[in-house]
Length: 250
Image 1 (tube, rainbow, N blue to C red):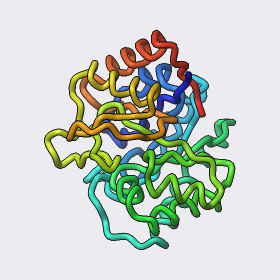
Image 2 (image 1 turned 60 degrees about the horizontal axis):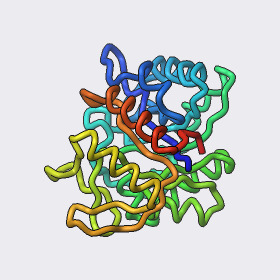
Image 3 (image 1 turned 180 degrees about the vertical axis):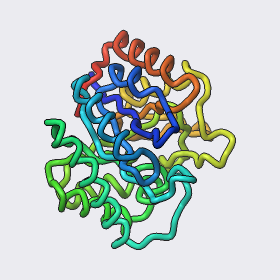
Image 4 (image 1 turned 45 degrees about the vertical axis):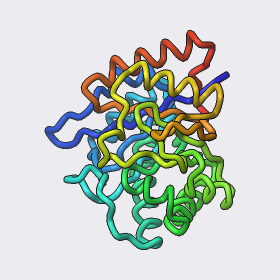
């Protein structure tokens, strides 16, 4: 049994340092690097790409809304054409650094509000999938398991990776609990790890209402910017491996 373990990195910018990039990189199999819109800057992008390549970690572009102050987590009114444009722009920006460092881009995972909106909005999802396919049809689209984003990627002919989250709770319809709700995040490490194990081994998760729902778990997202992110990354990797689950890139 195997699963990809991914993490959002490269979110520092200017004189601000966010996350534990260097320490977490060896613990995951793929990374999603911010492209300068919601976080990151050109120097951080270059440096993070270099670190990922040094660790033989698969590199993905992590395009988000142009909302640095809100960290890309605020919903913006955006047309399908605008979504296509900003995603294509950001993929190209990160890929420039990947190629210049001698690597190859592996996947694309939208960030934050753009990701969540596309999970439910077929038009937005289609625009994102089209931008990825137009740029490079061999790229893998990472999207929320069971979402419109995964469907749009499959419809256009992209390889897709259905993503699940270690530290987030789920609603009965398979959607993530909005961060605005008090029960959106799982704060106990063992509870999060047990949820991941169930999602990988049984392809199921328990919703906040106690309902068991089915999903597909190709890749598991862990967050790298929390206070205990590094310790959690070490724990989840160790426990998954001890359970016979290989940590391996898609």
